[in-house]
Length: 285
Ligand code: SF4
Image (cartoon, rainbow, N blue to C red; front, top):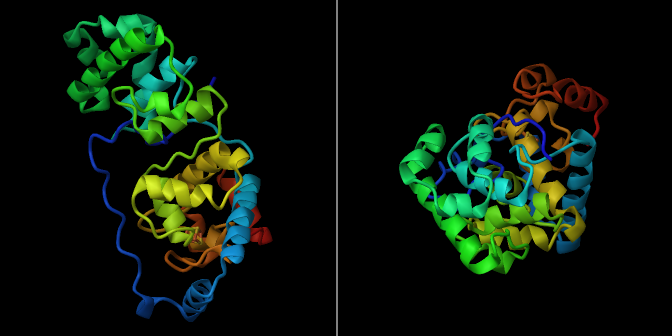
């Protein structure tokens, strides 16, 4: 149901640990004149201009990343819920190493509800915070058995009542297991949409609401994946690859990273690198 993973949680669970803060934005005074002109233009941007720019950036990302997917491996909604809970403060790659044995041993909500804590903790120990995560998984199993006949519900309101399932996890489950559009506001997503001046909000729920007002609902799940892919491969927190970025024309933060193609190209990561660099050379943005 999903393809192999690379990096950390597109979908961390209820965020038992606060993620690291973004580094401070570069001071206006040390930005290039081009960056300052862009920033000034953005300050004057109308609401309609912002909507158009955001949707154009989403279309550009669709060209850059024509194939996107949830980077956690799963076959059922329950497996996705479990993998998403395990992905909190852990890479998807590590979660995917752990889940084959876990899913073979625990196949139903009742299996988690009746799990031996010691045994369950051993299965999930490599993902970190394994005691809290074991508590969440056992609570999840119990709640599913008691309230939903062992099935994972498919509404946001019901999902967020489950132990270990916050809005972010609920949206991951809705979007990837049930085909219901959902915005997944993880660290990458929040960092990038603020960099793009789509919103200045830092609270994930407010970020979700702001982006929902900009982007068509049917695009929400794919947009979430595209933004996360872009954040992992190109728009890094500390040194974004601006010179090799397909969004350069529309990004008010262009210039926060190196703007020469040669220097920026060395920063691009992932299997799409050649494709992304070809687009950047062609000036697709
Ligand atoms: S231009 Fe730079 S800051 Fe903007 S999205 Fe691209 S890599 Fe990120």
